[in-house]
Image 1 (tube, one colour):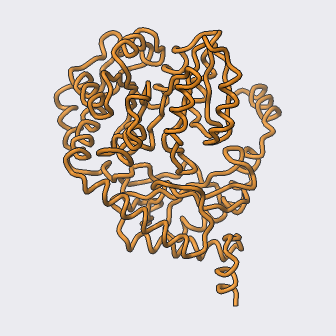
Image 2 (image 1 turned 180 degrees about the vertical axis):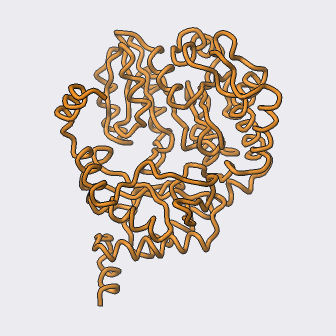
Length: 413
């Protein structure tokens, strides 16, 4: 980077997060871009050492499954390593179409369209569905890809307080009746682990003439019939207009999709710029997604094990007196409520063989920083117990308030 550009960027950058990262580097506690030397599994190798992985989004633990890896290998042998073009031109394979058919059936919609990443789905879909006189309404805790997709639209963007249906109704009631009102929301919120209040949201959308798009990146493979996601979980598939999902989590691959009615999918095929002007999803990614979907649908024990582990971990963490967020899923936020201590405890845990993800300002308010613990179907009870024990020990050692006075008193005598 040229000196002038670098100096201007650094002069402009005033966020606490930037300086927090710089401070963490100086203290040897910087927790990002950690290099993993093994497959994503319940145990990984970092710096040649065994570390228990509690920061992965592979909720069903399928990224290292033999059938998934075999499918990817066979796809490379048949199709090569890439498609050398966009879906719009020369980059559509027969397995892309097979995957789209399977996904539409899985989530209960007429048709689906696959993109190279989940982020690209939200960029392309949200930016092209509404016009200058229309409205995009977002939960304030939506994923960054939803926010960026709305920024690319010419529509007016309105945010409502997280999962607050009263605030949403107030916002909807002020909008013109004849305008398109697209409500875009996470099904499972990626940091909090709670689930959207979809029944109430559907009622409001019907009352005020809104349409609903659910981002099910963290819901697929986790909730709903055979893990079909949030709309399925509530029995409201017909009332949700668009269902989005990613393959980089439960589906053990890379890519994303949007599912809707036939006309909407046809429109998106010719207007979603992140589809038309991006290289196609690779053959190995498509094949591994199909294999993971087969496993999810044919072997229900994967989801059952995930929920058994989630209940066990949540119970142990609460018994240890740790302050948890409002989670309803395998995403478990553990509050630290201090930026520097969040970095410190993350580094301390890695040194003790536990990988967790820190969430600090400005992603969350400075007094709401947390560790994001992710549970997998393939974790053992012994691994969960080891993680909870070491997290509790680390919190005590740097005097993080657990929110449980009785527990604090018992551990400081």
